[in-house]
Length: 600
View (cartoon, rainbow, N blue to C red):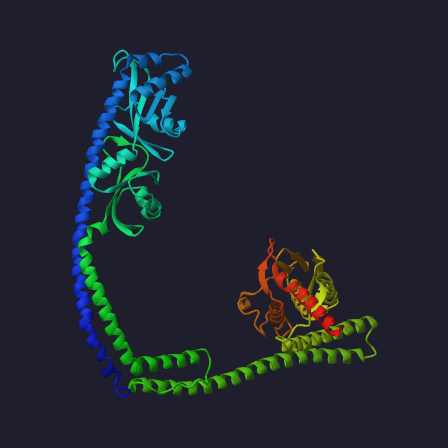
């Protein structure tokens, strides 16, 4: 089959279409049955909700009647005439026991709570007062109230001396019954489903097994807070169809957000699909075996050659131009391999030419920049030397010319040092235990003597006494470059040139920041300023200062950050990790101890 065309080789998997067609047909049949079952469950849920609403209406009427009977008791009215709230609170216990309710509360005519009694954890008086006050004048209705995870259905009645409508108000009575496990079981039996009552987004009571309650809290989501349509959820290993209805939305009730969730087991309703699932599993195994055989038969013609081709193209994408692609498989695959092989050879040749051209271009840019700067410095030295040879030149003029000669020599020295250091980047660091502050002070003294720092105020702040394992020559050069650049930038500013170097440290990093009051970094080079030979706004320089600074910081495990101070000055910061700088000290001590042991 190695000589077959790919189109011919792909005809073989068509044999498996018969098995796939069988599986698809059975799957469609199973889906239709599942949809019918789902529709039946949805109808059952709607019926369950209607059943609860009927039970709820009967419960509401019972609570309203009982609260009305309690409000007509003369002894209770007499108790409400007592001048002391403590007396009313003590006497109200007997009426609460008489009512047999789960919640019993008395309010004065102004709506302020006098006494409250309930079963279980004591209800919060502030919650009772704030949520029941608006409904105290309302009669023949119920209010849903939640406290400590318990839901109460409460009816309020006025306590009147004399006629119920025209008499003197003595206060208000609130009688409530909890929606507890018994209520949940009654609703569950009437609805033939599991039920969950929730208030304020939390489960209050339910008929589910304890092992599934935590799953319900995580799966239900918005169903615990508001009314939702039918949803599929999984509790443990069983699937349910669930719907929630707002309790506060029932006729004649109001109060905090409370919902009833009704759950019907999908798994129990789909037991009739057991045989279908068994047949599906058997056919699936058969299809898997047939598919494995087909895959094995076509591996030699398509899969294996393509895998080899992918490996070759991946190696080519990673820059390995020496990886040769093997030819094998169908005719189209072999043609593709030969095409990639030709492309590999062409890319290898082109890559070599590009590297040579890039190397020549880099050398050319460096040569042009160096020749221009060296010619400028040599011209200045030659011209000033010629002027100094004139006997008519005054002494003060000779000194000025000499300063210009020194400035040119400084420039040439910096240029050659930068080029020399640039060629040494990437080599091993010459580490030594050095004081950061002393290293910075040395570099600052050298910058102050530089002509570019003339008339520039250089301030050193926060000099830390920390010692670290660093390459003092390289890191000093990085600090020197930042200071020199800052001085040059400050002299181009509008105010008195000033440069500030601040050393800051914390538990993790040492930061060497250099700020200046110059015009800032030009937008034209902000994205490329760390690349070699990028420079703008300087009369001289080949653009290696920031490049070297960044490379030296990276060699020490850090980096260079560019930002601004609170006063808007440009700020360059060398950030060095202490874990690298101070960790080298322990490594050096161990190496020293090992060397001493060898000598002994």
